[in-house]
Image (cartoon, rainbow, N blue to C red):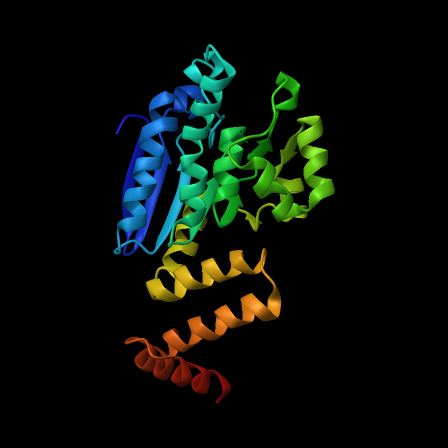
Length: 258
């Protein structure tokens, strides 16, 4: 695939690497409209994959939409709206993937690149990483899900501080804002370690935990969230892998407490 690689470095783990290092992994029309969404849709349907890591080749994660992409030159507002809507397949698919996703942010994550990182469930940054949403500085508004994901992650006021100024957020500040969970020198290796740990769990447990957490952010606690937890836990307790896994867990706990 042009501009993208998919590898399987360990059992149950997929590594998706944006591969346009000469353009800081910016997203051209092919990536925005076809390659990225189609790739994530295939991963969503791949039951052998239990965790997905997303990163960029070279010194950048993703610098956003390529300035030569046709999105910046649509002849009418209706055609511009259609183009942007079609690019938005990717952040929706990434958020809805049954597998947990980890963005290994190895450098600048800007614009749509910021949105891609935000759409992932976890973000790990390198010390050289930084985040930016410079839409307003170009007379534009945030898209690619940025205006939804960012305030949900760090709160309304901090998100508006970033979005209304278009300023850069360093890895250190991102950690303080809880935008990333950690800063690691070898960010891809760290993300793959986390993914490998995640991949030891059952697909049902992973997908349902992820879905329930996101539902809990939007739904009523008693009428919807706890009821969903009841239904999900009942299914999990009668899952085919639960008895053996639970027995191993009890044995491990007993050894630690003995």
